[in-house]
Length: 256
Image (cartoon, rainbow, N blue to C red; front, side, top):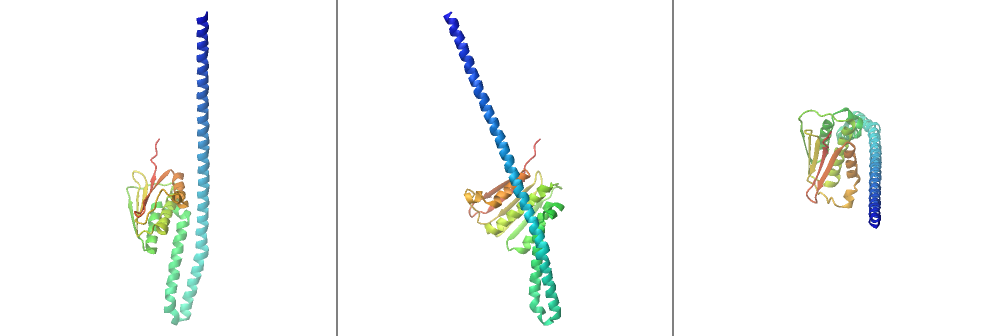
């Protein structure tokens, strides 16, 4: 009888232990599920915030483009018109006014090019690779930095509207960083579309330490990475002090 009671006690003890273990397992699974749900909501929230910021930036750029075209562009046209009239009314001043007239014309063309570059409607209506090539040609005329551009054309690639806008904006941000911070004498831009899209921008500038906090929190780099993530692209930056910088934008391979 005693042995029977001991056996019953052992069985009850084992059942209790099993129930306790099962309860712990359920608690752990529930905790993990809650963490995943929280992380998913946090990621979704961050994506929403990033998307809102990007859309706001696009609207600001659109407004600036419109202001440059409607205000600054028209004023320069009026100034040039007055100069031409002055040259007709006072032929003796023609040689003096000619350099000023040429400068106004060049400034007008530059502002028109910047306005077009900021206008996402123009980017959406044309091939993004051709838009980048056109912007490179414009920059080549307005900078002493050596710019080289190569495109491996192995067929036509279709881009979504967001891809066009964000690829072009990332290109613009890269070029702005090269001119503003890198102090480079040479910049190389290369694009390939097979097997997937890849844009690489290399400069021989001063480079920087990627581990610095200021670099990690740079608004320009943050914007580029946010834009890349929004279209499921990968942005990789490589830089070292004195060795220049390379930025590569690559389309993530889609898997079923």
